[in-house]
Image (cartoon, rainbow, N blue to C red):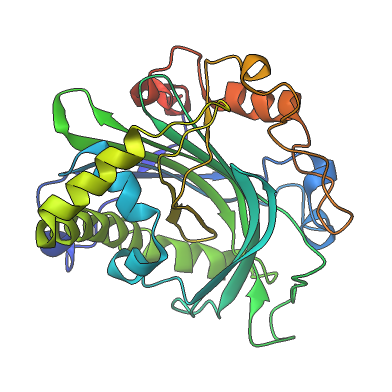
Length: 322
C-alpha cells in the first residue's frame, strides 16, 4: 500500500516514545490538490515529483475537552511546538475557517520556511473535532518561491486532516489522528529533500505529540478547579446557529489555526433551520485564493472526502491504510 512505518530515532525514543503510543507512517505522493489550486512554482515541477505524507496516531492522557482547550490557546504553543516561530491570521473566511500564515525555523539543511494555508474545522456527532487544511496563496502574504532569493522561502502544507476524538476505551483519554502532506518548497533537489525528511520524521512527530501529552497534563494539573469550571462552561454553551462554542485548533508545522471561542459547525444538524442566511464559507474577497471552498456545498464536499458519515471520528482514517 506504500505506507512505511517510521522508527523513532533511538536517541530520543526513551524520552519521547518509550511506551510506543505514537505511530508514524510515511508515504511519498504527488501533490493531491486540483490543478487549479496549485501555485505557479509547484505547477512547473516534474509530474513525477512526490512529497512526504505522514499518517500519525497517538493517545493523550487527558479528556477530549481539555485537549481541545489546550490546543486552542496561543499561550500554550511554546509548550508543545518549538517549530512555530511566528504566526498570524491573514483573513477570516467564516466563523469556522480562515487563511493563516506561519513561519518555522531552519530545520537541518532546510532554511526557514513560511506557509499560507486555508484551515477549517467542524464537530462530528460523537464530539470529534475535525480540522482540515490546504495550501493556498494570498496577496497580503507574498512568498519567496526559490531557495536563495530570500531569508525565508515559501513551503506548502498541501492538504491535511486532523481528528481529535474521545478514546473509546477510556473516557479520560483522547485519540489524535493526523494526515499531513507537505512540500518544503524552494526547488530542493530530490536527494536533499529525501535526506532531510528521513531525519526529521524520525524525531519531530514523536517530540511534537509527546509535548502535547505532557503539556496538557501539566497545564491543567496546575489549576484543576478553575480549568474544569471553564471547560464545562464552554461545552454547555453551544449556540442556536448550528455552531459550537467549544474551543478548537492547533499549532501544526505548516499552519497555526486557533478558535479559542469556538465557531465550528456541528455536522449532522440542519444548518438551514438554524440560520438559513448563514453559509459555511461566504464568497471570498478578491484578496483570497479562488481555489478555496466558497459555499456550503464545497465545504460539505471536503467533509465527505474524509468522513464516512458514521460520525465515528476514530474510524475515519481507516481508508488511508490502503
